[in-house]
Structure formats: structure tokens, C-alpha cells
Amino acid sequence: MNSSKMIALFLLTGLVLCAVRAGDDKEPQPEPAIQIADRLINGDPPDLVTNCVCKVHILKLQAGKTYLISLSRKDNNQPFNPWLRIEDSNFKQLVSSATFANTVRTRFTPPKDEEYRIIASCQGGQGEYLLRIAPDQTAKFGVNEDGFLLRWLALAPIPLAANQTGADAVGKEQIKNEAELKPSTGQRMKVGDKEFVWKEHIVSDFLLDFNSLLGARTEDAVAYAVTYVVAPEELRGIKMKAGSDDQLKIYLNGKEVMKFTGSRAALQDQETAEVTLRKGVNVLAAKVVNEKGDWGLCVRFTDKNDRPLTELKCKTAP
Image (cartoon, rainbow, N blue to C red; front, top):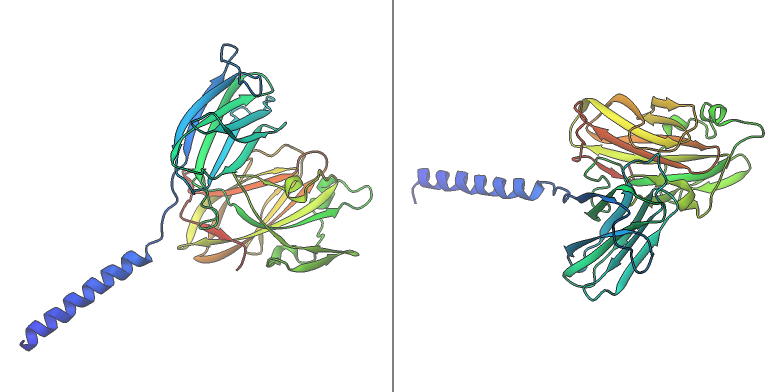
């Protein structure tokens, strides 16, 4: 083989190897969710188990694959008390989950490939609802297709001082230099005369529910939540959107970018701030104060046109 042919072969081989490596390096993208919007009305047939009006949705699901399934009322200002059941093709009940809140969530791993009956009903009357079925990809990405951050480190509950309001508490550092928090799973931290442990939590839908992760309703207390957001490149002029119950403060890379001092129930996108994510790891630290009742946090990023940034990842280690 002459020298010119050898050079051409070498160059061609190099191009093929580069193409293969480029394909290997390409990040997999999250699978889309199935979202079904419907309405429960008086004329709907009753569910034989719940004895409430219901709608049955038949979907083919893959064996061994874990799905995150949620049933929620589209109008969060009205009581719903959803009840979600799953049956196989022989009408055998596999899942039954209910709540006295407006959203019920469950994880489901089908035992075999077949069509399953997903039954939506509620104990709180009628109304429009949203049924959402999504592959459980939180371990791989930590961000869902709506851009919500799903993997968190949480430290709670830190009790409020005597006669302290939520507005007072959100403006005070319960942990010194809270803006610079960079915890790791299992790390112990002393607050006052009590020791706390940073614990990892994976959100099933979009809301980090502190009462659920603590296993009990806790009032007049502060929670810290930290996640590490990974951006593929520098992202300027994007939006951080957050919701909380109750008071909220968020730091991004050590800088305060959001604060809310009132009382409210947590909804998506209650607060918006324009921020910049640097390429690589960004530290997001949030403080949420609960006065009474529910206690939660949700955060996501969108572009300037409010489209979710699903190419992000979040994790619980820097």
C-alpha cells in the first residue's frame, strides 16, 4: 500500500472512531410522560371498591419498569381527595392509594406486559383532574420532563424560637453561613443543642413534602433542602420558578435569588427569578419555614419562554 493510501485509511479510521465516541458520549434523554386530562361528573359509574364516581383508563405498561403515577385536581383551590387504584386485566387490585390532599402519588412496577386498568376516583365530589404516568427516571436524571428538581438533601425539623413568626425565621440564619451550605448524605450538623442528619430524598412528582419525609405533621419549624444542579453549558437569563408552604428563601451558588415572607399553600411556579447557571455543578440551597399544616417545596428551571430545561441534572453529591 502506498503512503497516500495509508494516510487516507488512517484519517478515515480516525473519523469513524470519533463518530463512535461522539455517539457514546451523547446523553440519553428522559422518556416523555403520558398525561390524561378528564373530568368526574355525577353520571359516571361508581367504582365498586371506593363507591365513588370514577373513570377507568386502560394503558399497556411494560413489565419490570417502574412508573410514577399521580392523580391530581387541575384546580387546586377546591377539595378533591383523590383515590387511585390499579387493576390487572383480570380485575385483580394491585394498587390502592388515597389522600385527603389534592394529589395522590404512587410508584408501580407491572409484574408483566399487559393492559392495566388505572381507575381515577375521588372522595371530594367532582371536577377536572390530571392523571400522569411517567417512567421513573429520577435515579438517572433527577429532573423530570417539566423541569422539576427531584433529588434533594434535607435537614429538618429545626423548631422556631419562642414567639418567633415564620417571617422572622426565614430572615434569620438557623445554620451559620447558610448561603454556603454544601452538605453530603449522612453528614451530621448541630443546630443549637440538637444534632441533625442530612438525608437524601427523591420526589415522586414535583413537590418535596417535608411532613411526609419526616413521617408526621410538624409545625412551627424550619427545613433546609440542598441539591446540586448540573448544567451542560453556561445558561444566562433563564428562570428559576418555585413554590412553597410557607416562607421561602433560596440561594444559588451562594447568592440569595428568591425570598417569600408570607403564608400559603405550595403550588407550582409561585415565585420567579431570573438567574444564571454556570457550566457544571451549581449549588441550590433552600430554606422553608412551616407555620401550620402542610409543608413543602418545589423548584424548576425554564428558559425565558417558560419551556422546561430538561437537559439539566440534579444530584445529591457535588
